[in-house]
Length: 223
Ligand code: CA
Image 1: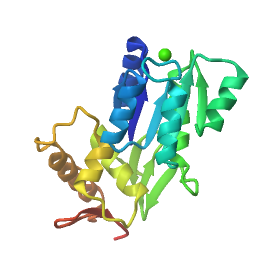
Image 2: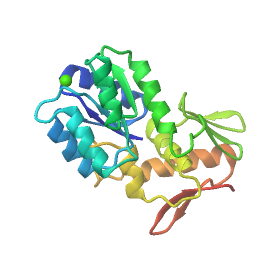
Image 3: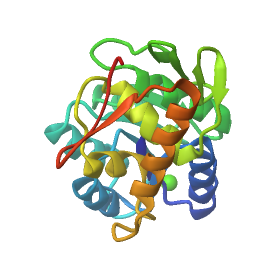
């Protein structure tokens, strides 16, 4: 899952980016309101973490502009504004959640995880397909109760496919949601990771869970 982090305090931003990347998310930092809207237009995000006091353009203005175009994207406001009125204003403008600074990193991570589970229906904490189980809290994968050790990127690809079961997902969409701006589109990284993921799943289960649809992408479905 890919997150846009809009936070102008460089140290705090660096701390959150590092923590979220270590937890397995793709994260792009933006340091002011205009940069946030620029990155938003350029990339496909699953969630935005948004500070309110920002240079160039205020967080609420950024939220308003994004909500005018996109009702679906999850927005979590992260702000030092502690007044109830500010929180209500943020939620009224369409934020899905509000966390006050200073905050605990693991609370932020839990709220992000929780928001990403809510779609039209709430997705379960565990995604499963036959004997294949993905624990999205611990970010671990099991086949028939035996753990399959995956790298963070392999896990990211699998979680995205499992969240869109029986749909063909293009390589572009997968890289868009699993990698951030650090991704080099001219490298073979994606092919390498998906190949390695397929191999690990096959070794554990002797089943081809992920199928390649030539010229279109990848699909995970019951085998
Ligand atoms: Ca700020």
